[in-house]
Image (cartoon, rainbow, N blue to C red; front, side, top):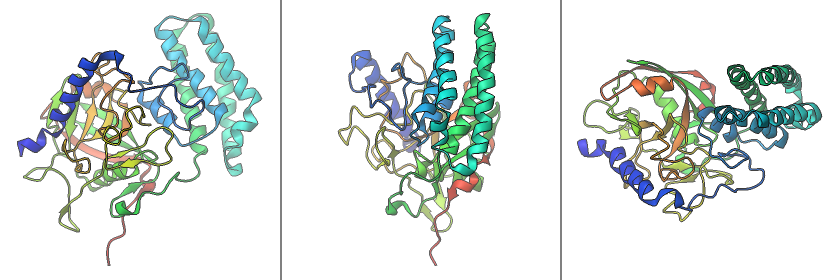
Length: 374
C-alpha cells in the first residue's frame, strides 16, 4: 500500500521543515554533557561528530580516559587540516604521544591480562606512527597526516574493542522473541551502482541491529529495490514484493514488529517504544545520532514507534537542512549503524536501483537468535 510506503517521507519531511523553522537558535540539544562520558557523540571541543567511523568508536561501551584522550587528539586533526590550522596539530600529536608513553599502564588496566601482549604491540605501532605524523606536519603534508591519522585511529579502535569484555546490559525480556546482536557486525552490500560497507552496532541497539543482521543472513534483502530516493534526504529499502510492508516470520506467519530503540548518552540501557520527545527528554542526545552521511536507521509508521520491521534507510546528511547536533530526527527514529565504505555509491543510487546481495562479513557470532517454542 502506497500509504504505508510513505512512512518515512511524511514523517521526516515534516521534521526537516521544523528544523528549518526552528533554526540554529533552538536550545533543545545541549552538548556540554559530563566531563568523561562512557559514550560520546561530540569532540572534546564540543563540535558534533559527522564521521560514522568516529561515532562508532565513541559509541563503544568503555570507560578509559587515556585511550579516549588519544582518540580525541587524533580525531581533531582532520578538522584542523580542513581549516589549514597547522599549529594546533602539534599539540594534538604531543598529547597523543604523551598519553601513549606515560599512561600506558592505565590503558592496559582496562584490557584482560591475556590480551596485554596484543595491546602492547598495537601501542608500539602507534608510537612509531607518531613520528610519521610529526614529519608530515613539518612539511605541511596534509595527505600523509590524514592517511596516518586514519591508520592510527583504526589501531585505537582495536585497543578499545579489546576493552569490551561483556555485553553491557540485559535486553528486556519482552523482546526475547526477537533476534539480538550482542556486539557489532559488518555488512557488505552489492548494489547496481557499487559496493557499500556498513557497521551495525548492537552495543547501542541490540534488537534493531539483531533484526537487520538476521534478515541479511536470511537473504531477505537480496534483489530488493530502493523504493524511495531523495537527494540530501534519504535512500530507503527493505519493502518486500507483494502486499506486506515488512518481514513475515515463516515460523509464526506473523509480521515481525521491531520496537523503537534509542540509547541515550549517560543511560545504562536503551529506551524502548517511545520517542524521546514523547518521553519529555528534549535535551537528551542519542549515542548514535543522525549526524553522519550514511547513517543507517529503521523506518516505521509515523504514528507507531513499535511498527518497524524490515524497511530501513540511509540518511543522506545535508548540513544546511539538518545541522549536526540540532537534528530533530534524533530520538524519533532508531539509528543502528553507519556506512563506513562506499558513501560515493550512496550518492549514485536512486529509486528502482537494487540491492543485488547483502552478507555479513564480520561479527555473525554476535547474533543471538531467539529460542523456538517447543
